[in-house]
Length: 282
Image (cartoon, rainbow, N blue to C red):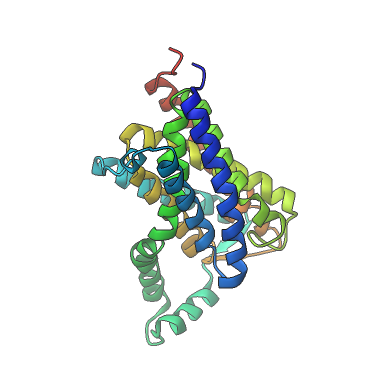
């Protein structure tokens, strides 16, 4: 099915505005010292696109849907991270657990009388709940664009595979300048190595999130998945891993193991997606 004039104009408007707002958000990173403005810039571009093109904001997928898929969106990133770091430690690319990080958290939480195990449990529970919810505004801003707007718009004239890959690649591309200049990533591996495995990780993640979005017609599955992935990788498993000289090549969102594990999970949801969602040309 060919793209309609309306979709072409709407997507063109969206990408122009995302580029403009990206420049503003990028500038604000250096003024505020955090990535929140850049993430919110996608949401701002999405809302303005809807207003200019006279699209209803209700089309962005605000319905909650069934709890089954919301819980799945929360737990799948946890299991991807868990399996990745089990493999990382088993293969000798890191060790569990980082007692220095726990000591630091004791000071941060003012829990110096607690033992290490108690502080670890407290940190995980806090990250999985309070930190998870605190990340909502910035993640929602990003997901309004990628899964709220872009996925359903592309699905009007693309197959599930194309929707998943295109929307996910755009999402990955949006991060590239930050990785290339060193604002995002690690200081050990080459930027092109980080770029490759980060893109593989993001596109694998995007396939799963696209499936959830199209299955439920709910933006919230993507928001929950995105928040969960950030929290469990960035706040729990990576800092809790004792790193060695090889670790940076395999851990986190920029390493090989996490990306390849996510790719395996994505293959399952890709097969479900092509079986459940008919191509617009069918």
